Image 1 (cartoon, rainbow, N blue to C red):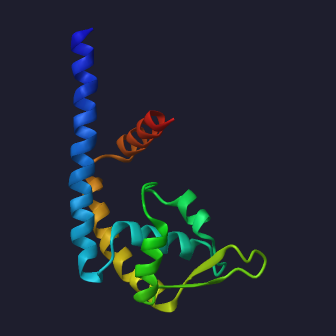
Image 2: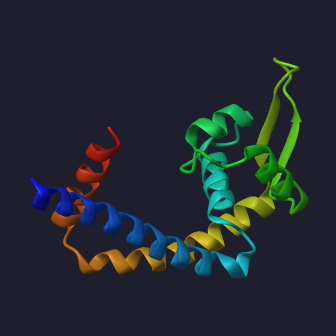
Length: 141
């Protein structure tokens, strides 16, 4: 059983190492756009909402990094004119957040770079990619 334990410990170490490596690559690619991975994730969510403003709680539910401080991120993004924030007409306790034309522009440019970064994954087959995805989902379930 001790040997099996080492196998699982190795998987944990490899997951952490790969995450760290990929995040470093991602930050490097995004740096010229002055955008963090968390901000990029928020812009993708807002862009996917298709001209429908969303709440901070909606963003919190859909971001990849659940530890993100959504309010702080939105504050920074609003200063950069990537998002707008206004009082919700139907719920005055809620703020509506929407992506701006500048936000869409930076998202498009950064996405081109991220698509290039994703090409490092082409070293594995589609079948391997599907298997890895299934395994990662299973781990999180």
